[in-house]
Length: 137
Image (tube, rainbow, N blue to C red; front, side, top):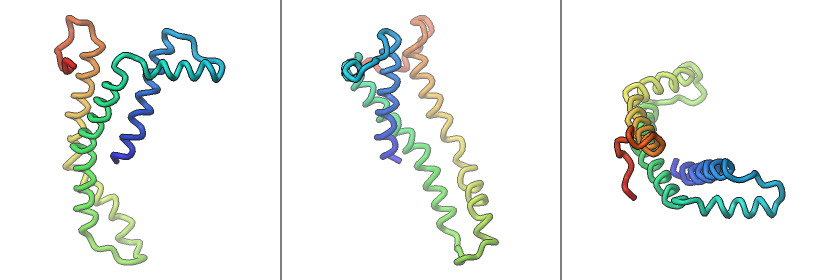
């Protein structure tokens, strides 16, 4: 899970900053222009600080949401007996264990999603509508 966060979060961050930079500059047409463009992507203000915040947030959200769900799944699914090559009970076991594991933990995504939306809304909304959810740094 953390490998995916450390792999995908920087790629998404670079892509979003390249998109922002593309709003002001023409998309590169040659390899030399692409090299210059990508160097400028890394020079966007607060690039590294925002990347650290996004990676940290991804790890916190995954630890508080996905890790709990997977641990609960392992408790339910791993604690049951599975006979070898017996399709009758094994065919229904993932479905039943999924309902038993993810039913009680399905609400965990909501607070993390609300916090993420409030953070980005506070960065993008007009000043009079902001609620100062972002950190001063």
